[in-house]
Image (cartoon, rainbow, N blue to C red):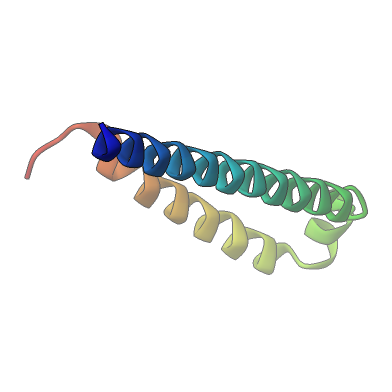
Length: 79
């Protein structure tokens, strides 16, 4: 019986630590999202594209390449 209590106690502590870590991760993601959103609100995209069209085009291509690379592993194809 003592071993069962010890195992239960260990599992309970692990679950509590996991919840704390999940809460911290959630807070970190929310803070990062809010910071990125505030930063993005200050950017005038139309003005940037007018001033730097080639840079905007290169940036759009890089973002597209990055997103395509992220989606490729989840497409379900086997090579």
